[in-house]
Amino acid sequence: MNEKPSPFAEIFSEEDSLGLLAGKTIGPTRSTEDEIAIAHFEAINAFIDENGLLPGNTDGGREPSLNEYTLESHLDTFRDGAAYHNLLAPHDRHGLLGAHIGAPAAPTTMSEVIASDDPLLDDSAKQIFTLRHVEASPSKAVPDEIARRRQCENFADFAPIFATLNADLANGRRKTSPFEGEGSIKPGTAFIFHGLIAYIADVDTKERRGKNYNARTRVIFGNGTESNLLLRSFARALYDDTNPRQIIETAPAVSGPLFTGEPESGNPDDRHTGTIYVIESLSAEPSITALSGRLYKVGFTTQPVEERLADVEADPTFLLAPVRIVTVFETVNLNPQKLESLIHQFFGHARLQVDVLLGRTVSPREWFVVPIELIREAINRILDGTIVNYRYDHISRKIISR
Image (cartoon, rainbow, N blue to C red; front, side, top):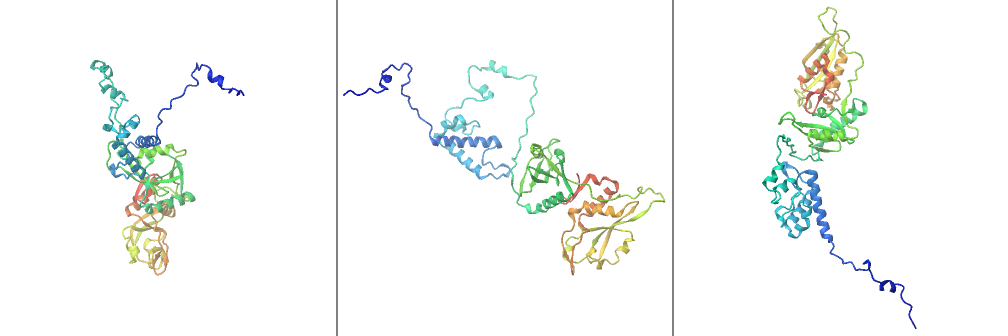
């Protein structure tokens, strides 16, 4: 019985002029371990590209992350293991393996080419690379510290500030406005940074290095973290936001005019409208004496001041204790109620916020923990109209420009 020939027999019997049936030699393939080693090495390269330093670097007191320590461990392994040298040499763009590599790496930059022993580049040929009549470009300063976002250890000290900022934004005492540039980044200012409130706790200007010194800042964020960004870096980050905003105070909400007529001019028609007084408490209560020299009440009266203070020991407004007059301001052609209200709003963040137990619970509203010289300055700035350009920063205890 004759078997039926295979349909492919004729095909395989023909001459394979095109080499279609030639067997393909299977070459060696890279092992999974090699791929992993290259991936780890590229992760080290990427870290250096982004941060400008080796993983695990502790210069300047910085604390490396756990990921950095892992990368550092991998780098030590690659440097010490001769088996990795040839594998990783083509990927060593930062010269991390250095002298550990057996064969010298091929030059990759123009300076390396010029410095090589290539006979094509003898002394006469190298002269073509000598620049003449060209000013050298100024070297760029390299940041001595890489800013890191980290947990704010004393965030409890700043929590009341964020509570006040949020409350003021809600009730209209503050609002947001477009970011005005790095000149507005000062201690005590606040910004909206990628949806978070960012409070400038400090700007290091103690050691200036010329007029272009880029100060280091301490920025506290509303989520309990902080950063030490350089001032210009923080400004640039704000500009990169889709809608950079800064938080500012609105104009004091005082209805009616401050001045009832023309300012004092010696005119016999000038009208005395009242007296602004500043007093301190002589209470023996420990919670009050602890604030001695820093706690003051600002009030006004149309009576002689001595009459207004006649029965203070029976008045909760005066903490049920004797007081001492520190200073007074006579007001002429001026609405003293409006002046008092302006002062109370200006120092609102320094208002005494505790309930004092003085035989009964008292919640004073006109007492402020503020240095007396700042109270005098604020009143004078209200009188000359410049108060709108300033605000009181209760953290630094200074009157600063807006």
